Image (cartoon, rainbow, N blue to C red; front, side, top):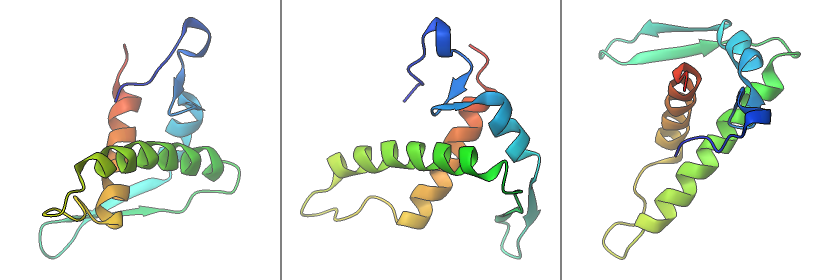
Length: 100
């Protein structure tokens, strides 16, 4: 699920400018939960939130389309919406780190 980029939009990640997404991520932090999980916290200012939300939603939509192909009689839903949103966030961060 690599970004489809051309020379003119090579700095776009999930349809948004890499710099805008990195700025939004500067407002995100993690903490360890009681069972070894990570809790993601973010208090994004209104001027940086929209691009970040749009990018996560685009990646989540890609994952949803992929999941739709996996639905069978025996396997009703491959992952929960919460799992899919978490996976979308991780996928977006990995894309941001991909320097082509």
